[in-house]
Length: 143
Image 1 (tube, rainbow, N blue to C red):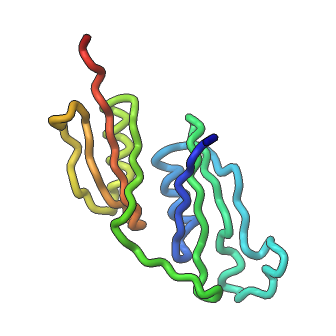
Image 2 (cartoon, rainbow, N blue to C red):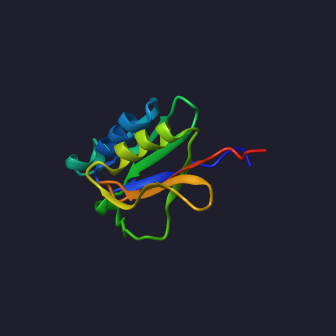
């Protein structure tokens, strides 16, 4: 397997959400495609033409987050649930704190950052767009 990438579906808020993630993780948008730019896009409802069919955010360390706007006019619907959480393994407590603070802003903290019994600094939150995150820094083992 070459790589795996989280692919988010948003109900018309993809551009806003991905700019939020860019502010938290840094990086650049390497792909940004609007529905109006695809074949037949001009036939779509005018209010949906500027929505994103695909966007990729590549972080400074090469991780890629992808997303799309789900459109009701195409009989698409989002059902939010708790069946998935994105785990990010960080390189330090400070990085964990920075990302957790950014992702939880305007969202909900389910497990505050804390040193755990399994030898990690860990916390869980749901961001303001309904995406669930687990941030984890594993302390080095003393040999």
